[in-house]
Each structure stands twice: as C-alpha cells, then as structure tokens.
Length: 254
Image 1 (cartoon, rainbow, N blue to C red):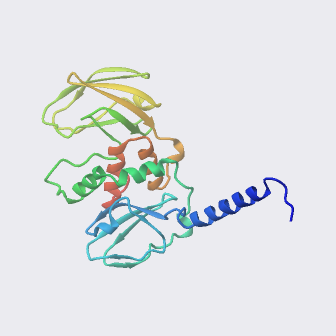
Image 2 (tube, rainbow, N blue to C red):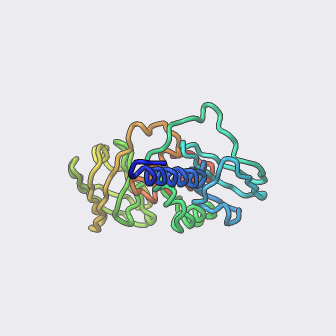
Image 3 (cartoon, rainbow, N blue to C red):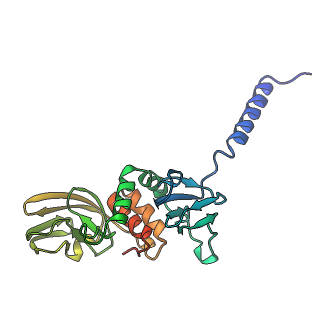
C-alpha cells in the first residue's frame, strides 16, 4: 500500500498525543477542596491537603477542619464527623476565585500558617493581646499590606508607651499623630487608603515601608474564601493568616 511521505509519522504523533491526553486525564483533575486549617486531627488532614468531594472524612470528637472550595465557599466540619463534604445549596454557588488560588494553597501549606493558626486557636484571652484583625496593619515589619478603601488601621503588639507617628504617601503627609499608651490600634486619616501604592510610616523615628493594595469593590460582600485568595495573591500573608484563624474559630471576617 502506498502512502504519502510523512503520513505514517503524523499518524504516529497523533496516536502518541491522544495516548498522552488519556493518561493525563485523571491526574490532571483538580481537587475540589483544600484544607486551610485543622485542629485535633491527624496529619492526613493537615493544612494544604487537597480533598476530593467524594473523599471519606473521619473526625474524632472535638476535632475541627476548615476547607475552602475553588468557588470560594468555606466549609467547617466538627467531630464527631464521618462522611464526605456536604454539597452546597443553590445559594452557595459563586464565581471561581482569582489566580490567588495557587498563592493561597502555597500559604496554607507553609509552616508559618500552621503555627499562626494553631497558636491563635490555643491561646487564652489572658495569654497574649488579641491577634490582629484582618484589616489591622502590623507595624513590626515592612512589606505588602492590604486595606479597604478609606480605612487604614495600624496595629502594634506592645502598647506600654505612647509614640509619635507620621505617614506619607502619594495622597499626602500627616505628622505628629499621637499613638496613645495602652492602645494597640491607631487609625490613620482616610485619604491614606484611597489607592494602591507606597506608604512610609515613622513610629517614634523607626521607619516602616508598606506597599498598599486596596481591596477591589468586586470583593465587597464576596465569600470569605475569595477575599482570602485575594489577600494571598497580594502577598498580605499575615492578614490572610488572621482571616484563616478567625474563620477556623467560627468568627466573622471582621
């Protein structure tokens, strides 16, 4: 039988390509949920673990497992529990999170996430000052910070003395702001949180350099999981961890 030159090679390549797609099909399937926080459970449910919607989950008495679905829906399971993740109702349907999904998976699987979330869960009210709220900007270091438009609150762990604060950004400069003794939070003028960009803060002469990201209006009222994915995408790691700790404890976003 005569064939045109190259026909056999093309057919072979096509067969190999189809075979590769078939072999990759099951492995390429995306997990339905990712564990973002766990307490009182075995290592098989550690933060960062991907779970299919048909996987059998068994939790002992007192255990707690918080999961996020790709849609941004949050699910918390408490032991005793045995079964699969409950299916969402019609009201739970939503758009998929942004590309922050991958950043979120990296964050929740880190040692930093495990120690922060479990530490917050185990500490009693008298052990340490309350952990930062989601929108409290920690002043112990520089780096990325996320804010809601027109709302900017600094946070410090130690509040045993008063301090003088100044802040400057493209929006302007504010000097001589008094951070009173005994107060862990300090609200800055609204105009400092109107747009993305750099903000430099001086606290008792010590500089902090922040890169602010303003939450888009599309996230207003969105599922907590979508907000969490956005925080991770902007590299606002501590704020994302603060949100995880609150959700795992059964609290509201803020």
